[in-house]
Length: 264
Image (tube, rainbow, N blue to C red; front, side):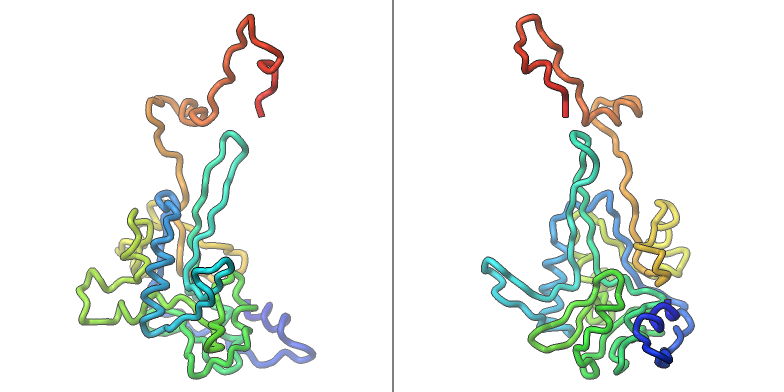
């Protein structure tokens, strides 16, 4: 990844780009269960509320209740349809900074504002050093960086470091706001390098995977894949598969030409 960045940003002799530091022994991250995410956006709104009033904010918003609202969000949920009619399904895909082990946003930062913490692997931005050049946004293949137009600094998910380090909160509350707000338990938080942690067990048992591994950034955040769930009344795999594709109604003797129309 570093070589690719040198080739992308360099002209003539490539500028000096720091090689990635040794990976931290502890890596905090999110594991998102796509099978139970319902796209309610509770994670989006809770993230926005907490970080606007916390150490990361205030976050930019322009005309938030108008026809063309714009603003800065650390977490977004993308929703789209998959499959071919009539066997279609709605996919909800939450996405934020993935806190990569080899984050391309860090070496391209000319001021050192973007950095990866050695203690827990969280990728952060030092607002006092950020000049809003957007190099990190160009380098990030996941579109996880956003500029705060009011402050002219680059922003991103911090895994709510001001929450998880707040000893005034109970142990159960020292989690990212999005995790606490999720009504279906689709978001897990913990150390993915600890084989005994809840997140590591979920990745191992459910076949967790990284987003766009071909970029070789080694994202810390993982996703748990969707799986076929039981259908009421279905007793075989074929019935589960065909549950969303009922047979065409039988044609009666008095049916008109419309009964011969092919199914789409």
